[in-house]
Structure formats: C-alpha cells, structure tokens
Amino acid sequence: MQRRNFIKTAAAASAGAFILPRFSIGQSGPSANSKLNIAHIGAGGIANMAYGGCKGENVVALCDIDSRKFPRKPWAVDVPKFADYREMLDKLGKDIDGVCINTPDHMHFNATLACMERGIHVCTQKPLTHNIWQARTLRKAKDKYKVITNMANQGHTYDGIRKMREMYEADCFGQVSEVHMGFPGPNWNGRYFKKPASMPLPAEPIPANINWDLWLGPAAERPFNSLYHPLKWRGFNDFGTGQFGDWFCHIGDGAVWVLDLYEPTVIECVERGPAMEGMIPDYSVVRFDFPARGNKAACSMTWSDGAPGVGTPIKSPDDWGWGKVPNSGSFWYADKGNAFLDQRSNNPRFSVKEQMVEFKENGGVAETYDRVKGGPHQEWVRAIKGDGPECGSNFDYAAPMSEVALLGVLAQRFGGRIEWDSKNMRITNRPELNVFVKEPARAGWEAGQDLWT
Image (cartoon, rainbow, N blue to C red):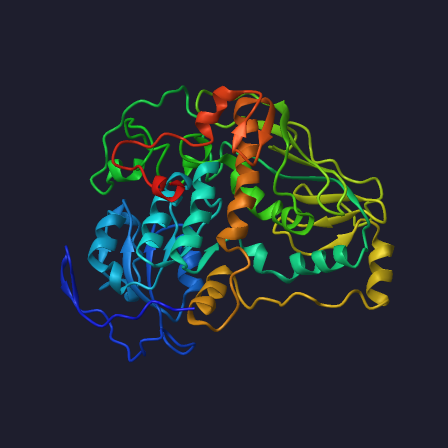
C-alpha cells in the first residue's frame, strides 16, 4: 500500500514562517524506521493519550478552538498552532502524514473526513461519529481514499478480547443467548457531567481564548455556556452521546466483535430515568435484539447505566464465583458456561471460578489471533509505516460497532421501541426519528454527501 510522502518543502502558518523537518524518504513511502509527521485536532484532555501513543513521531501541528488547551511542554513550544482545522489542513495538509482527532463527539465526523479527503491517515476517538449516517459515510470514505484508519478504543488492542474470541470459537461457551452490560453513571457531580438548573442554558460571555463558532461546528447555533465547554458536553444530546456512547465502545466491543452483533432488528429502552430537555437521562436500560447470524443463535444484548443505587443494575449470573459482582463490564449467558469481560473488554473468565481454574489447568486454548503491542495509536503508526497489519478497529469495524452504540443512544434518548431496517438505514415504526439517523448540519459544515452519489 502506498504511503504519504514526508515533508519536502517549507510551509508558512498564520503565526509566522516556520520550517518543518526534512526526511530522506523514498517515493514509495515511509519505512518502519522513519518518523511520521503527526497533527492533532483537539489538543487537550484525551489528546494526551494520543501524544503518548505517537511518542517518537514528529508533532508538526496542533489545532484547538481553546488556546488554553495547547500543551505547555518543551516539544510543543514551536509547533504551529491553529484554531480552525480547515486552515491547518489547507496550509499544511500536504505535509502531514496522519492526524489524531481528539474532539467532542459532534466534531469527529467533519474533522476526520476532511483529513481523509486529503489522503491523510486518521485515528479518531470513540464513538466514531455522532450519528449513524456519519459512521456509514466514514466507512465509504475509507474505501474511496485508501488511508489507514483506526478508532482509539484501547481494549480492542488488548489480549483479553482476543482470548475471549479464541475461547468462543473453541466452543468453550456454546451458544450465547444473552449479554448484559453497563457502566455506573452519569455522575452529575463528577468531572464529565453537570445538570444545569434549567434548559436551555443561558448565554454567558464567550471567553477570549475560545472560538465558540468553531466549537459548535455542524451543530445548530446557540449561546456559549461554560457547561458545554470544557468537558461536560457529553451530557447534551446535540454534542455528546452520554455514558452510553462513551463506554459502550469499550464494554460492548467484545460482544459485538466476538458474537457478530452488528445489525439489531429491535432496540428498546425498557427503563428510562428523568431527563432535562436536550440532555441524557439519569439512568436507562436498553435491550438490543439480534436475529440468528450464520451458526450463531439469536441473541439479546442489554445495556444498563445509572449512578449506584439509581436505576436497575446489570443482570449478573447466579453462579458468579469471584467475590463482589462488578458494576461494569459484560456478563455473557451461554449454554456451556456463563462468562465475563471487564469494562475494557479484557480479562475474560467463566462465571464459575472452578471452571476457569480447570480451563487453565488443561492448557486453555491456542492463540489464533495475533497480539497487539501498545495501544491503538501505536498500532496505527505501525500500520502507516507498513510495519504491522491493518488496525483492528479500522473503520470497516469501528463504523458498524459505533452504529450499534448510536442506535442504543437513540433509544435511550427517545424511549420506547425502535424497529431498525439496517439495509435501508431506516427506523420503520417511528419515521419521525429518522432525522436523527442523519442529523442536519449547520450551513457551511455539510460534508460527505458526494460519497453517496
């Protein structure tokens, strides 16, 4: 596969002229020993995960709508900095090999697609997009632009999710008929969630360090309020996907990947706590129904969230033998032995401790899936350099997996039953909800429609 060439010329940023590093790379692309030129869209918070994962490569540009978020590290002092990623890509795009997208959920799609359109490799935070149409569009973009893609859900690089699949394929569990999973929260007094006194939020002065119009991106205009930015956007439906979208991409990863749970026919919110207008509920229980898939029997998957003591906890098996029952992760109900994966889809085990001891004493199962060194960003860097296989959470996987999460988010948001026609990307029993399958974008932020023509 052809790789983008490294920087050969100097470029000028709005902050002034600067010279980017030169490399002696052949026309065929970077080698495993070359350094990539990496940019970051979103420079604070979760970006620190990306900085660490790309350590050793060249950070050649940083972009954030909030100038306070640029890292105060020696390596970042002379790096060109932008507020608008479109300006960054226009000025430096031909010299950038890969971009890490570390923005709030509602900006993932536009920023990721803009990079892909320029032939730039992308590693995007989870969930991949804010709506289902965007996820399918990024999958189409992967096919068209032939770039290396990855979604940064760490657990998909861990050994445990591979071991669980090896155990399942060795018929250790038999048929799995139910999976119950979840995560406690939202914690309305925590770091990421805050319930306002009322909605809509009142206008506050826009701080000088924030470009509010760029933060909104494709979302509808509204006044600035400090409960949106920083950090607490997750609880607002127009920007985040709540506890569900944030954690399903970790906790649900194992079940989706191992059991092929990609196309539910029914998604039903069977329990829903109170919610302020435009915000996620205090708690929920959402069930997905999946038909038989090849030789896999029909299966339901149920998500539960809510603060401790609020809502219905995850259904746990009666035969749990490992002490206190975890309040997060996934419990698998199967005819040869119930099982469990933790909140990163790692550390697989049978519910019955003695069954797991016997399994290990008998040698376990053979490793049939290659293990991954480091996390998703290191995996992505190696794939770009041709020093490793395609990323496990590339968009051919990350898009349909995120779609399952986003269907659950829709059911949680509106309550009740959703009947889903995956082939036609339509909600059949409540057509008024289809506007949220492909949300309208603010003028000037429309993107991706050409991939459907």
